[in-house]
Image (cartoon, rainbow, N blue to C red; front, side, top):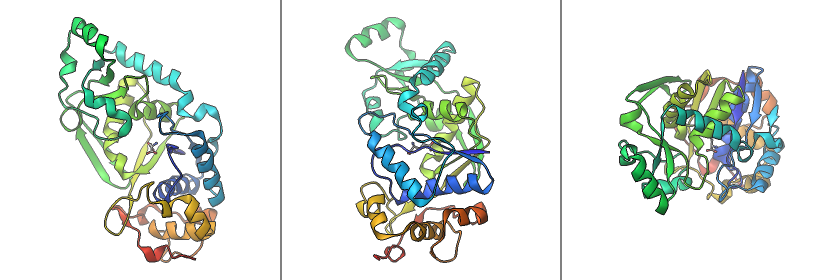
Length: 308
Ligand code: GLU
């Protein structure tokens, strides 16, 4: 059993990221499995090495460790372009890739997992002459052609999730016009290359999984055996906690809490203990139980985070 935590170092870690990281760690450690820390620094405009180093320091402060990756440059996606290139060529050879000149896809980096798909892209039908002509004025993004095919998988927390790739998702970008690799391709190549058997990540990525499962198949790779999409932490008004909630970033949290106090709060939110009583990561790993983890988004109330 091998799990992973795959953060994008685009800011200080906050309570929401930490919640996913903790569940990935607990699940692996409870089963005596290994854990990889992969740094997903694909977007050069947003990701900074200092954020990655800070993130590792924050995880260590909490008592969360890993067996592979972390400081190892080979596990930083910015150093793995050769692997993505090989996968891209493989898809090209299978006639599954085409250049797309639609302008909105140039905004891929602004929404790395977001609504970057288009059910029927007119660019798929361009002739080689039209492509050559358009390339003179605009470098294209590269998309994969998805089939009319239903892809289903049993999520460990969310139940069976299915999508018809062509209808619900559509062709999607795997490489940006400036050469930057898209998350969907990189995550598949890396999870396969690193032998990951369990993916634990936020529920916001649930709808990416059918695309990724299809990419595994198209590339002839073995997908992880198990996916668990964990609920998001939300403010009492339902808004997702984000990096802009500066009072919930690790800098602020470390000033307010000891590691065990913060872990106690997270464990309580994750259904693992009836109160937010302080607890250590190793104690939690012993008793970790997926069946107690809530399925729906979790409101974080102000009284759970008292100012000490
Ligand atoms: N790097 C992604 C993020 O920080 C997570 C990707 C994944 O876990 O598959 O949102």
